[in-house]
Structures are given as structure tokens and as C-alpha cells.
Image (cartoon, rainbow, N blue to C red; front, side, top):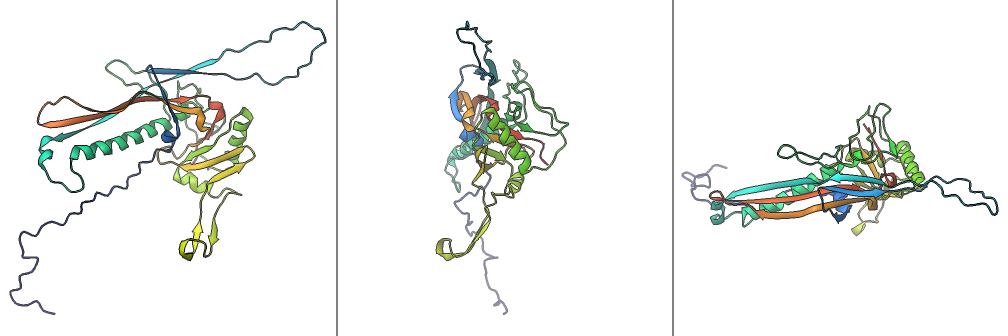
Length: 317
């Protein structure tokens, strides 16, 4: 159909108001499952310390009637520690923003502070999972660094033959070896080792790719066809792993986006804490011009109360 002669249509019009939705869509993941699960405790020094201990091995205990009792050799506790790491960020917004009428938020600085807080929580989660040794830092030249999970978990592990395990006290990182496929056999072996050491793990943190492997574990693949059982009678296929029950304990699988795909951590949750020297706080910094700067800062560290209660499958392809 032809357009009428001299039609004045929307392409010719000037002054049509913009159609901008009052909605901001952000699907960036913000979950921090390990950080959120850790018990929060207080640190009172930049080097936070704790102690571990263990019982001697069981031994035959046969004694002669009336014999004099001799004291057995005793073992001192082990003193461990981790440095607090400063994690911070800031936003700077021109004061002109106060007079602007914006879509999706009233004040830009409030919106950006909210975003920054979520970003810093993800930075914390990344630091807790990192294969990183603790570092004391130096005045004016280097920041303190906390030792992440791979620096602590060394007793109950499955790793490549050419890998080098960490010492287990946070002083060094592990050296990765030649990657091999993650498997149920490797996983079950670590679960057994943890049990033999006295641990009772409850959570497994792993990447999406390794989660797909776990879905195929024999005896735990929960894939089934449900006919007419869903809401409204809709057919559904469910493929999920809630818990994995083994003779060595029952664990929940929790996919994580921020731990390395090569690492699968099998943790007893109450054996890990986050010790905070300075809780997350928002502070307005001094004005140096026609703008406003807000800083968010926190200082904290990871506490591995006794690494023998947990384990890891390392060097997964």
C-alpha cells in the first residue's frame, strides 16, 4: 500500500520524547557461597593466630598389676596464623549528578556504592579460594595478603604425581601438576581419607564443569522423567544433585563461579572462619573539588581451624 502524498509521519517529527524504561537489568552473578557459609569472627591484629592439636595414635595398652605409672610423652599444640588483607574500592561522582533526573535510580552515588559492595564481596570470595600464600606486606610498597584454601588443605588430597603440595600452614602455595579428569573414584578416595583423619565434611565447592561430572556419579544421578507430577500437570525432567551419600559421610554439592575449575574442595564448614579486623564500611573521603568520593573498605583473613577435617581433589582437567 502506498504512503499518502505529503504524509507527516514519525520519521519527520521532532520532539518525540525518549522511551527509556525506569529499570536497570544486571544479571552478573553475585553469589559468594563459601564466604557466606563461613562463620564470622573478630581479628584484633593484622596477623590472626589460632592453635591446632591432635590425639596420639591408638596403641596397645597392657599394664602389669601394681606397676608404677610412667607419664607418656606429650605433644605441644601447633600455632598457625594468617594475615589480614585489605579489600577496598571507591566511587567518585561529580556533584552535577545531584540535579539530574535519571532513569532507574535517584542518586548515582547510591547506586554505584551498592554495586561496589557486591563487587567487593566477590573479590573476597576469590581471595578465599585463591592458590595464594600469605604475605606480611611492607610499609609503602606491598599489601598484606591472606593465604587461600589451597595453601591450607594438604593432608586429604588427590593430586597429580608431578604436583607439589603446600606445606599446610599458609606460608606457601601449591604447585599445580598435569591435569587429569575429575572422577568419582578420586572423590571417594579423598572422602575416605577425611573420615580416617576424623573429619565430617558437609559441603563440596566445584566449578560448573566439574559439577557436570558429579552429576554422572554412580548412585547419585537424580535424572528422572516426571509425568504429570509438576505444578499444573506439566511434564518435567529433573537433573539435580542435592546430596551425595557415602560410607564416609554425606555432602552437599555447591557450584561456585569463583574457585578454579582445577580445584574441588570437600570441606567441613565449621572448620573455616573469616576473621574480620575491620567490618565493611562506607566512608566519604575529603572533597578536593566539585565531586564526591565514597570509599568501601574491609580487612579480613581466612581461618583454617584444622585442615585435616577437609580435603581437595586437585589438578582436574
